[in-house]
Length: 476
Image (cartoon, rainbow, N blue to C red; front, side):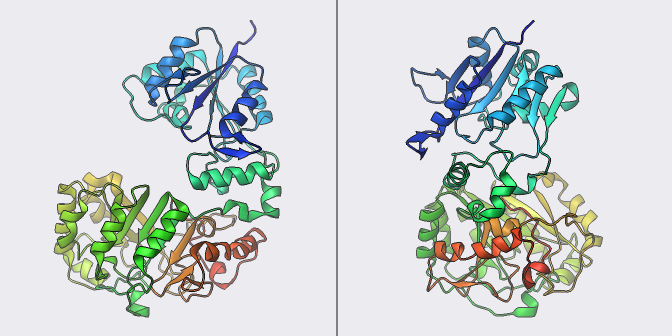
């Protein structure tokens, strides 16, 4: 019996913005789906008479598909906000799926947005039953996540590229400004699954349309002297010299969405006008803010933090008892910090606990995990950072990949220090590559770092980068 295949396009909210030649992401995806010559159905989150409506949730979509599509062997799932689908790769996936009688087929180690998912009727029915009552939002990776819950129950077919492309680690969609610009860059440069590395080696800067993660050092002053931190060796106490209101305004109008972290060498809560900072966080709901703190100065702010939905607090606590805490943190604040953490949990503030694993803290790791076991989903075990050789090497294990690839931090992050310089990251402890934001705009300074990123693609690593052990650490 001949296979009966159908294509499903899930029409997402951000797919109607023009990419090139007056064509939107939805137009491009529709054109590619039509080229497969299978019947296709379009399901939309918007109540548009031209398409089949679902309310945005997983169960609603699968229920609508089950109702409207009766006769098929396999479904190929596309999202309308991912115009870079490679049709030749898709055809290979369908062929492998059919010839191997697979339940589920996907392409692994390609960047997200280059390939759809293929599943047979029996698998679809099973996922539909599993999704009953699942009101979470349908995303491009929802089907894969449902399969992963019990992957050994399925016959899964996987297609992989000849060269591992995981290090690119981007999602190519039109769902936000950064992803839209990335996707547009790839589309304009005619990048497909076969020529990704070749094209990127020519123009690696197309991976840097905007930063996704910005760290701002409000203060280089700290009330502790942790054994794993550069502060005791530097001790240049100052508060940020840029106008924080103008700075946040410039950043938010540029990136629109993303992550901003307040941390650096100093303790953020020593900044004298923290009330203004909290007000700026509230006024920028599309940006998620993170405050990394030692937690000792939190008490007067807890009540003001509890109703801020776009904020996460990360507390560094590297001991499970008072004596070791004082030895590691250089301050007798153990009871204060524990109390502040408990108060934040009680007030339902989004809080994570971070432990830096190094020779000075290793004996406390088991006690730390046991003490905060009830927060296991919100515990961060972070590797030691010697800041490109600025500090003594105290790491327990070497986690670096065998083969070096271009730095994720150069690709996605920036660090704005308290002196008003934009640096590529906090590894540049002596400001070798910084740009003065009193002279340049943030965007100009960011673009001036393209040359440094290109050197990574050419396997040329300057002093700071050559000694760095953070190039493979991915933030968001």
